[in-house]
Image (cartoon, rainbow, N blue to C red; front, top):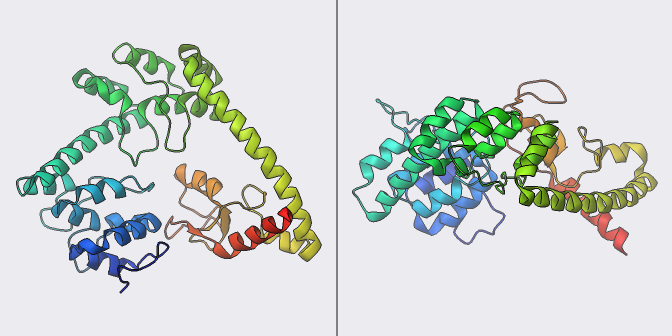
Length: 322
């Protein structure tokens, strides 16, 4: 088993990290976080010989700070109210409730989870276009309009933009004050979400209500154009170097099969193929669970950095600077 002197890149196998969490080894909190950062699916996995997941143990032990850190890790398969394997089954809110009298930290953790459950339910209603349910919750707490759990990608306003639901937006806007500057987890305004999905009228309408939203989007566009120009120039130089060295076959090894562009952040999916991270993440975010190359069902959706390709490209980029 790895020691607490492990370097920052280290992560452990599930059995090892599970044992550390179960023993509540306080000296290994950083290693727990680093491992979950690399293997987020470990958080809610329950081994055959136990009844609880790592998430359940974090709640039982009242590890508020670590809990707050790990639920902010991007994980499209994360389920907040993951059930135990006990009979009867319990979720983390029930576990937190049972343990809240143990300490002030346990009580804070219960309050945190209770609030997360409310936010999660509200955002899920928005995602599923259950506007009447959103309205009912806003009548009780209008602050929910601008809240979301950290593991959720979108706030309510982004879900409305994604669905092109201007009518619902106007209805709910009469009940609450939307923060028009809210950004998704990947730093996009609601108008950017609408534009991306060809909901131009709604996007333009949103920006007419909020000059700040338009200014943020325009700044993002400028930054994106600048990055794209630099990327095009860099890729042209690297492509020339690759073709000179190894021809088209070698170029294929450094090109994403989805974007048809040279890799910048290559990752390997469980189908064995390497993709540009942003491209395959977008594929997965749409709910796809089959390989885009083979159409075979994926065994998992973990994205593992392809360090071989990344290092090779890094060396080529450095060579171009000389």
